[in-house]
Image 1 (cartoon, rainbow, N blue to C red):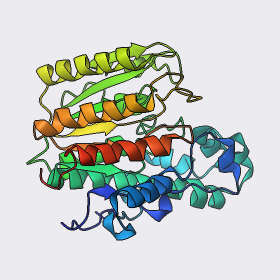
Image 2 (image 1 turned 180 degrees about the horizontal axis):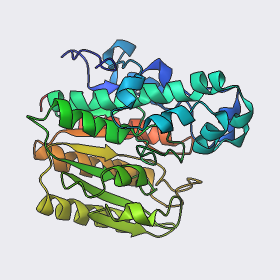
Image 3 (image 1 turned 45 degrees about the vertical axis):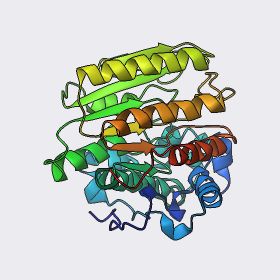
Length: 326
Protein backbone atom coordinates (compact mmCIF):
# COMPACT_ATOMS: atom_id res chain seq x y z
CA UNK A 1 0.00 0.00 0.00
CA UNK A 2 1.20 3.52 -0.70
CA UNK A 3 0.67 4.59 2.91
CA UNK A 4 3.26 2.16 4.27
CA UNK A 5 6.94 2.40 5.08
CA UNK A 6 9.10 -0.68 4.59
CA UNK A 7 9.77 -2.50 7.85
CA UNK A 8 13.30 -2.22 9.22
CA UNK A 9 14.53 -4.08 12.28
CA UNK A 10 16.59 -1.11 13.51
CA UNK A 11 13.45 0.96 14.10
CA UNK A 12 10.94 0.82 16.90
CA UNK A 13 7.39 0.10 15.67
CA UNK A 14 6.27 3.60 16.62
CA UNK A 15 4.65 5.56 13.79
CA UNK A 16 4.85 9.33 13.42
CA UNK A 17 5.00 11.93 10.64
CA UNK A 18 5.85 15.61 10.79
CA UNK A 19 2.66 16.00 8.74
CA UNK A 20 0.43 14.94 11.67
CA UNK A 21 0.06 18.45 13.11
CA UNK A 22 -3.18 20.28 12.33
CA UNK A 23 -2.91 23.91 11.20
CA UNK A 24 -5.64 26.18 9.89
CA UNK A 25 -4.72 29.83 10.28
CA UNK A 26 -4.73 29.64 14.06
CA UNK A 27 -8.32 28.42 14.23
CA UNK A 28 -7.12 25.10 15.65
CA UNK A 29 -6.81 26.98 18.94
CA UNK A 30 -10.61 27.18 19.04
CA UNK A 31 -10.77 23.42 19.73
CA UNK A 32 -9.34 21.94 22.97
CA UNK A 33 -7.56 19.18 21.05
CA UNK A 34 -3.75 19.53 21.03
CA UNK A 35 -3.23 20.00 17.30
CA UNK A 36 0.45 19.00 17.58
CA UNK A 37 0.11 16.22 20.17
CA UNK A 38 2.01 13.67 18.12
CA UNK A 39 4.92 16.04 17.59
CA UNK A 40 5.13 16.85 21.30
CA UNK A 41 5.06 13.17 22.29
CA UNK A 42 7.70 12.29 19.71
CA UNK A 43 9.98 14.97 21.14
CA UNK A 44 9.43 13.69 24.68
CA UNK A 45 10.16 10.10 23.63
CA UNK A 46 13.34 11.16 21.86
CA UNK A 47 14.52 12.78 25.07
CA UNK A 48 13.45 9.97 27.41
CA UNK A 49 14.50 6.98 25.31
CA UNK A 50 17.48 8.52 23.50
CA UNK A 51 15.75 8.19 20.14
CA UNK A 52 16.18 10.18 16.94
CA UNK A 53 13.66 11.17 14.28
CA UNK A 54 14.82 8.31 12.06
CA UNK A 55 13.92 5.77 14.73
CA UNK A 56 10.21 6.17 13.97
CA UNK A 57 8.22 4.83 11.02
CA UNK A 58 7.03 7.63 8.74
CA UNK A 59 3.81 6.88 6.79
CA UNK A 60 2.88 8.31 3.45
CA UNK A 61 -0.47 10.04 3.01
CA UNK A 62 -3.36 7.64 2.46
CA UNK A 63 -4.85 7.87 -1.02
CA UNK A 64 -8.45 8.34 -2.11
CA UNK A 65 -8.44 4.80 -3.55
CA UNK A 66 -7.43 3.41 -0.18
CA UNK A 67 -10.06 5.47 1.63
CA UNK A 68 -12.69 4.09 -0.72
CA UNK A 69 -11.99 0.60 0.65
CA UNK A 70 -14.24 1.69 3.52
CA UNK A 71 -15.68 5.15 2.93
CA UNK A 72 -18.53 5.88 0.56
CA UNK A 73 -17.82 8.12 -2.40
CA UNK A 74 -20.63 10.41 -1.27
CA UNK A 75 -19.01 10.94 2.12
CA UNK A 76 -15.57 11.70 0.69
CA UNK A 77 -17.12 14.19 -1.75
CA UNK A 78 -18.89 15.93 1.13
CA UNK A 79 -15.48 16.78 2.65
CA UNK A 80 -14.98 19.24 -0.22
CA UNK A 81 -17.43 21.53 1.58
CA UNK A 82 -15.86 23.54 4.38
CA UNK A 83 -19.17 23.78 6.25
CA UNK A 84 -19.34 19.97 6.39
CA UNK A 85 -15.79 19.70 7.68
CA UNK A 86 -16.45 22.46 10.24
CA UNK A 87 -19.18 20.29 11.77
CA UNK A 88 -16.91 17.24 11.93
CA UNK A 89 -13.99 19.21 13.40
CA UNK A 90 -16.29 21.04 15.81
CA UNK A 91 -14.73 24.36 14.80
CA UNK A 92 -17.59 26.41 13.27
CA UNK A 93 -15.25 29.13 12.00
CA UNK A 94 -13.79 26.62 9.51
CA UNK A 95 -16.83 27.10 7.30
CA UNK A 96 -15.51 30.52 6.35
CA UNK A 97 -12.16 29.19 5.09
CA UNK A 98 -11.63 28.09 1.47
CA UNK A 99 -11.69 24.33 1.19
CA UNK A 100 -8.10 24.08 -0.03
CA UNK A 101 -7.04 25.58 3.31
CA UNK A 102 -9.23 23.11 5.20
CA UNK A 103 -7.79 20.26 3.13
CA UNK A 104 -4.16 21.20 3.67
CA UNK A 105 -4.46 22.29 7.30
CA UNK A 106 -6.83 19.69 8.73
CA UNK A 107 -7.83 16.85 6.42
CA UNK A 108 -4.36 16.17 5.04
CA UNK A 109 -2.84 15.75 8.53
CA UNK A 110 -5.72 13.44 9.38
CA UNK A 111 -5.04 11.41 6.24
CA UNK A 112 -1.44 11.00 7.38
CA UNK A 113 -2.57 9.90 10.82
CA UNK A 114 -5.01 7.44 9.23
CA UNK A 115 -2.19 6.01 7.13
CA UNK A 116 -0.17 5.78 10.33
CA UNK A 117 -2.82 3.60 11.95
CA UNK A 118 -2.82 1.25 8.97
CA UNK A 119 0.97 1.06 8.98
CA UNK A 120 0.92 0.37 12.73
CA UNK A 121 -1.36 -2.60 12.07
CA UNK A 122 1.17 -4.12 9.70
CA UNK A 123 4.04 -3.47 12.09
CA UNK A 124 2.20 -5.04 15.01
CA UNK A 125 2.06 -8.35 13.16
CA UNK A 126 5.84 -8.20 12.70
CA UNK A 127 6.92 -6.96 16.11
CA UNK A 128 4.03 -8.02 18.33
CA UNK A 129 3.12 -4.40 19.06
CA UNK A 130 2.99 -0.97 17.43
CA UNK A 131 2.00 2.54 18.47
CA UNK A 132 0.71 5.30 16.22
CA UNK A 133 1.32 8.75 17.71
CA UNK A 134 -2.05 9.83 16.32
CA UNK A 135 -5.21 8.25 14.96
CA UNK A 136 -7.97 6.61 16.93
CA UNK A 137 -10.78 8.40 15.05
CA UNK A 138 -13.46 6.24 16.62
CA UNK A 139 -16.44 8.55 15.94
CA UNK A 140 -16.13 8.19 12.16
CA UNK A 141 -17.80 5.37 10.26
CA UNK A 142 -17.89 4.59 6.57
CA UNK A 143 -20.52 7.21 5.74
CA UNK A 144 -20.32 9.84 8.48
CA UNK A 145 -17.69 11.75 10.48
CA UNK A 146 -17.98 13.60 13.76
CA UNK A 147 -16.28 14.40 17.05
CA UNK A 148 -13.06 15.66 15.35
CA UNK A 149 -12.87 12.34 13.44
CA UNK A 150 -13.00 12.71 9.62
CA UNK A 151 -11.70 9.25 8.62
CA UNK A 152 -12.48 5.77 9.98
CA UNK A 153 -8.90 4.71 10.62
CA UNK A 154 -9.82 1.81 12.91
CA UNK A 155 -12.14 0.30 10.30
CA UNK A 156 -9.61 0.94 7.52
CA UNK A 157 -6.89 -0.73 9.58
CA UNK A 158 -8.93 -3.85 10.24
CA UNK A 159 -10.25 -4.14 6.69
CA UNK A 160 -6.66 -3.95 5.47
CA UNK A 161 -5.57 -6.73 7.84
CA UNK A 162 -8.55 -8.93 6.99
CA UNK A 163 -7.93 -8.52 3.26
CA UNK A 164 -4.12 -8.60 3.01
CA UNK A 165 -3.13 -10.59 6.10
CA UNK A 166 -5.94 -13.13 6.08
CA UNK A 167 -3.58 -16.03 6.79
CA UNK A 168 -2.72 -14.45 10.15
CA UNK A 169 -5.72 -12.26 10.96
CA UNK A 170 -9.23 -13.67 10.76
CA UNK A 171 -10.70 -11.91 13.76
CA UNK A 172 -9.91 -8.89 15.93
CA UNK A 173 -10.73 -7.23 19.21
CA UNK A 174 -11.17 -3.48 19.68
CA UNK A 175 -10.44 -2.31 23.21
CA UNK A 176 -11.77 1.24 23.27
CA UNK A 177 -10.79 3.09 26.44
CA UNK A 178 -11.27 6.64 25.23
CA UNK A 179 -13.69 8.52 27.50
CA UNK A 180 -16.27 8.59 24.70
CA UNK A 181 -18.23 5.77 23.11
CA UNK A 182 -16.58 4.49 19.93
CA UNK A 183 -19.71 4.75 17.82
CA UNK A 184 -17.90 4.90 14.47
CA UNK A 185 -16.31 1.45 14.49
CA UNK A 186 -19.38 0.13 16.32
CA UNK A 187 -21.54 1.15 13.36
CA UNK A 188 -19.07 -0.23 10.83
CA UNK A 189 -18.80 -3.64 12.51
CA UNK A 190 -22.45 -4.10 13.41
CA UNK A 191 -23.32 -7.82 13.30
CA UNK A 192 -19.74 -8.74 12.34
CA UNK A 193 -18.87 -11.71 14.53
CA UNK A 194 -15.19 -11.52 13.64
CA UNK A 195 -14.82 -8.20 15.50
CA UNK A 196 -15.27 -8.15 19.28
CA UNK A 197 -15.74 -4.68 20.78
CA UNK A 198 -14.91 -3.84 24.40
CA UNK A 199 -15.86 -0.26 25.21
CA UNK A 200 -15.62 1.59 28.54
CA UNK A 201 -16.90 5.16 28.32
CA UNK A 202 -18.69 7.99 30.06
CA UNK A 203 -22.33 7.34 29.17
CA UNK A 204 -23.36 10.92 29.90
CA UNK A 205 -21.26 12.71 27.27
CA UNK A 206 -21.09 12.69 23.45
CA UNK A 207 -22.09 10.76 21.36
CA UNK A 208 -24.82 8.81 23.23
CA UNK A 209 -25.31 6.62 20.14
CA UNK A 210 -27.76 3.96 21.29
CA UNK A 211 -27.92 2.19 17.93
CA UNK A 212 -24.13 1.82 17.78
CA UNK A 213 -24.09 0.55 21.37
CA UNK A 214 -25.70 -2.69 20.20
CA UNK A 215 -22.33 -3.71 18.71
CA UNK A 216 -20.56 -3.63 22.08
CA UNK A 217 -20.00 -7.15 23.39
CA UNK A 218 -18.35 -6.15 26.65
CA UNK A 219 -19.16 -2.67 27.90
CA UNK A 220 -19.02 -0.45 30.95
CA UNK A 221 -21.02 2.77 31.06
CA UNK A 222 -19.15 5.03 33.44
CA UNK A 223 -20.54 7.92 35.47
CA UNK A 224 -19.12 11.42 35.69
CA UNK A 225 -15.95 11.73 37.77
CA UNK A 226 -15.22 7.99 37.92
CA UNK A 227 -11.90 7.46 39.74
CA UNK A 228 -8.97 5.04 39.45
CA UNK A 229 -9.97 2.19 41.75
CA UNK A 230 -13.39 1.52 40.23
CA UNK A 231 -12.12 2.13 36.69
CA UNK A 232 -9.19 -0.27 36.91
CA UNK A 233 -11.29 -2.90 38.65
CA UNK A 234 -13.86 -2.79 35.84
CA UNK A 235 -11.13 -2.89 33.20
CA UNK A 236 -9.57 -6.02 34.70
CA UNK A 237 -12.98 -7.68 34.81
CA UNK A 238 -13.72 -6.73 31.20
CA UNK A 239 -10.39 -7.97 29.90
CA UNK A 240 -10.90 -11.33 31.61
CA UNK A 241 -14.47 -11.58 30.30
CA UNK A 242 -13.49 -10.61 26.76
CA UNK A 243 -10.69 -13.17 26.58
CA UNK A 244 -12.96 -15.86 28.00
CA UNK A 245 -15.45 -15.18 25.21
CA UNK A 246 -13.14 -14.41 22.29
CA UNK A 247 -9.61 -15.22 21.14
CA UNK A 248 -8.41 -12.38 18.87
CA UNK A 249 -5.65 -12.57 16.29
CA UNK A 250 -4.95 -8.85 16.82
CA UNK A 251 -6.05 -6.14 19.25
CA UNK A 252 -6.71 -2.50 18.40
CA UNK A 253 -6.27 -0.47 21.57
CA UNK A 254 -7.86 2.98 21.42
CA UNK A 255 -5.98 4.63 24.27
CA UNK A 256 -7.63 8.01 24.75
CA UNK A 257 -6.28 10.17 27.56
CA UNK A 258 -9.47 12.19 27.84
CA UNK A 259 -10.21 9.99 30.87
CA UNK A 260 -7.77 12.18 32.84
CA UNK A 261 -9.11 14.21 35.74
CA UNK A 262 -9.87 17.73 34.56
CA UNK A 263 -10.31 16.87 30.88
CA UNK A 264 -13.01 19.26 29.61
CA UNK A 265 -14.70 16.73 27.34
CA UNK A 266 -14.26 13.36 29.06
CA UNK A 267 -15.43 14.46 32.55
CA UNK A 268 -13.90 11.45 34.29
CA UNK A 269 -11.36 11.63 37.12
CA UNK A 270 -8.55 9.19 36.34
CA UNK A 271 -5.11 10.18 37.58
CA UNK A 272 -1.93 10.16 35.49
CA UNK A 273 -0.82 7.07 37.41
CA UNK A 274 -4.19 5.51 36.63
CA UNK A 275 -3.67 6.02 32.89
CA UNK A 276 -0.18 4.55 33.07
CA UNK A 277 -1.51 1.53 34.96
CA UNK A 278 -4.37 1.19 32.45
CA UNK A 279 -1.93 1.03 29.56
CA UNK A 280 0.33 -1.41 31.40
CA UNK A 281 -2.63 -3.66 32.17
CA UNK A 282 -3.80 -3.72 28.55
CA UNK A 283 -0.35 -4.31 27.07
CA UNK A 284 0.70 -6.93 29.63
CA UNK A 285 -2.56 -8.85 29.18
CA UNK A 286 -2.24 -9.27 25.42
CA UNK A 287 1.53 -9.30 25.06
CA UNK A 288 1.79 -12.11 27.63
CA UNK A 289 -0.52 -14.15 25.39
CA UNK A 290 1.45 -13.33 22.25
CA UNK A 291 -1.45 -11.38 20.72
CA UNK A 292 -0.30 -8.43 18.55
CA UNK A 293 -1.54 -5.06 19.81
CA UNK A 294 -1.89 -1.72 18.01
CA UNK A 295 -2.14 1.39 20.19
CA UNK A 296 -3.82 4.54 18.85
CA UNK A 297 -3.84 7.80 20.84
CA UNK A 298 -7.42 9.01 20.20
CA UNK A 299 -8.77 11.80 22.44
CA UNK A 300 -7.07 13.83 25.15
CA UNK A 301 -7.80 17.51 25.57
CA UNK A 302 -5.43 18.83 28.22
CA UNK A 303 -1.86 20.09 27.96
CA UNK A 304 -0.82 17.36 30.38
CA UNK A 305 -1.97 14.57 28.04
CA UNK A 306 1.24 14.53 26.03
CA UNK A 307 3.35 14.09 29.16
CA UNK A 308 1.16 11.28 30.47
CA UNK A 309 1.27 9.45 27.12
CA UNK A 310 5.04 9.77 26.85
CA UNK A 311 5.50 8.63 30.46
CA UNK A 312 3.22 5.66 29.81
CA UNK A 313 5.13 4.56 26.70
CA UNK A 314 8.42 4.91 28.59
CA UNK A 315 6.95 2.82 31.43
CA UNK A 316 5.85 0.11 28.98
CA UNK A 317 9.33 0.04 27.51
CA UNK A 318 11.02 -0.20 30.90
CA UNK A 319 8.63 -2.92 32.05
CA UNK A 320 9.63 -4.98 29.01
CA UNK A 321 6.30 -4.89 27.17
CA UNK A 322 7.77 -3.02 24.18
CA UNK A 323 10.48 -5.50 23.29
CA UNK A 324 11.33 -6.00 19.63
CA UNK A 325 10.30 -9.64 19.61
CA UNK A 326 6.71 -10.82 19.23
